[in-house]
Image (cartoon, rainbow, N blue to C red; front, top):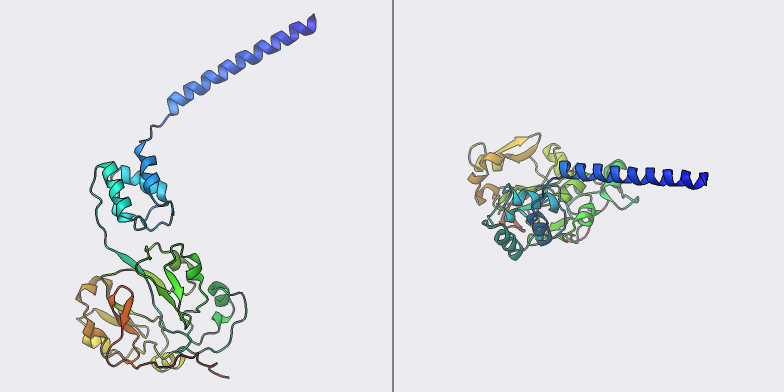
Length: 293
């Protein structure tokens, strides 16, 4: 009889404790509840779910929150199709907006047919691993190693290696997400406006003769582009032609015409670089041999 009484007391205590805790949770829920605009989920459902960061946000959810708050416009999601952007705009009752289109560009033109090797790399086939092992074997310490780390990380299929081991950007597929920028251990990629047609496809900072001995299309810091361009548009900085971002609107195609190596190019279209009239024509299609073999 005593055990039954003990069980009844224990049961009553547990029931009372359960009621008390339930009441506390209910009160906390009312006190701490944060209302969320249901449109956030609706916008998120209309986004591509790539979470690439091309819009400048941490992911699609963060973009949806900013869009509902009016801090970003639908057009800032460069991965979305025009219809998706319009659907988001209609849902929110705003204009889809427009942004300056950007693209990834590579500051190197030294494929295996124009750039010399001082050693053949035989390790793990990634640029990052090759960089650790003696710089990857390329005579130009700044040049692209052509092992495709950038291709591997591009979730949009916008990058592919050409026949000479250089990454080629597909302008139609590139969303300017910046993954290739982060993946390249040589820091050769950057995100640029497609309106910026003048481009230095080189990062070699060795002196002219040394740079040219390592790669036939390296910038030799001859200064002809500096002389031909608008004042202060191009300067020579540590043996390399550098374009002033603030003066890019002053660029013109004639700025590249006297570049003998073709290191400075003009983008006639977002994925079609053109070299100047004085640039040497490279007819070789085979890889160059080891420099000291």
